[in-house]
Image (cartoon, rainbow, N blue to C red; front, side):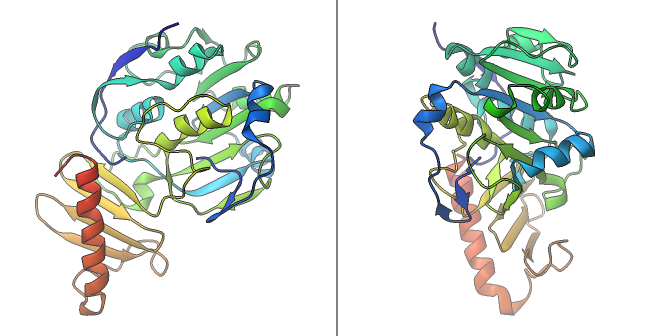
Length: 306
């Protein structure tokens, strides 16, 4: 079967799960070849999940506390998850098509918020959230189904062989690159791997999920802007809002620049997580400001903006 290429339009920005990682240390628990041999299912749950279901999942999973949307607008964020891209490409290979090519049953459940129809991006079947689970191996994308698909997996015999990614888009519509507008919750579970009930502060993107899933199930990597954090930890993230705002963030420092007014904001995210004290004009932080401006310039260049 030929790889399916489709047109993909997402806003420009820069280009996760690593359940074997605690900050910058990798700990091997089970070889990936062993995971691929049992053909794990994959569930991607997008949307709010009832507290009881979310709490039960968290006990057996890892919560990523610093996951970001490369663009704060939801159409671009959804496109990024599907394609693994943070910027614009003439063509993109999509996550469902890769899973289908590998023999997975690709199923969509819930409310489709993307362009066109689920079938247009590689899903074979569109089902009701409450319907029984697909035959294994499956790739199930559940969007705004109230956690029904996740609950169905967790209460079934498939729970122990299903990789779960669960997140919620932050669709505030605000023209901002503050953490409250671009940072999203992410919970990931891979049966048999990682420390259940733990958290990871590692910086990552939603568009890292596609390449991470490929690695976890043993599929060849597709060229994307994302990366599986099993291989490398990010030391920064870069986010963009249309042609106006750009942001680069490390674990401790954050720089936001308005490309129209040239206003610059610098925040110490460890001391000021609410981003209330702009340090850009503080002489004591002149060196940090220069370093973050250098990082922003390099990130923009890597994204093809300069």
